[in-house]
Length: 209
Image 1 (cartoon, rainbow, N blue to C red):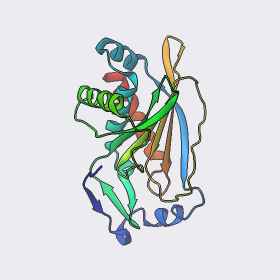
Image 2 (image 1 turned 180 degrees about the vertical axis):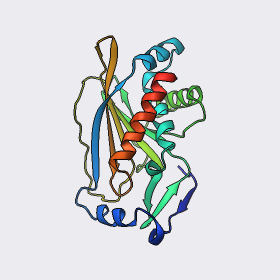
Image 3 (image 1 turned 90 degrees about the vertical axis):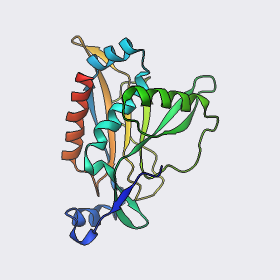
Image 4 (image 1 turned 45 degrees about the vertical axis):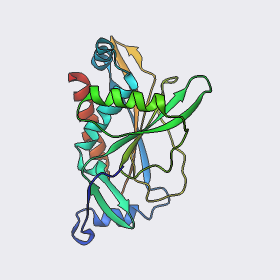
């Protein structure tokens, strides 16, 4: 969406070897699924009359943007690091049961983001407005099922590095609401430790918002 970035000096970059290995893999993207406790978050959403979807997209984007590895991308054959990343999410038309892909810039508060995202999603007529931008996180909700694993359509682009986030139907268990969440990333940039950092940051945000 036009966010500023810096081009990485590849020869001195600490992930040079990792990037060279994984950018040539047949399937360099990998996906991890785990649960989040949304008990407090669900309560806050209800108290503020927020959209759960829009509020959760903000939460994930805020936390992912705080982790450098989630902001790396390939651009014209080079590696770049964006200052910040925006959002691209699916939004269902309940009448036609068809979704549209909506792009919304990240905002500095959850209230501003929910307002802008809701208006943008409701007013957009097109199902697709163009190719997915480089400086976005992609989101898709599956509120109908509680999944334990998820996979994504593979268009054969080995340098597609936009992380994809999915979440499913939450379940009440031992007085808590637990929700499945999945993270797909490009291994050239993101390792398991970084997904772990995101999981910790996101759970803290959901607990304290």
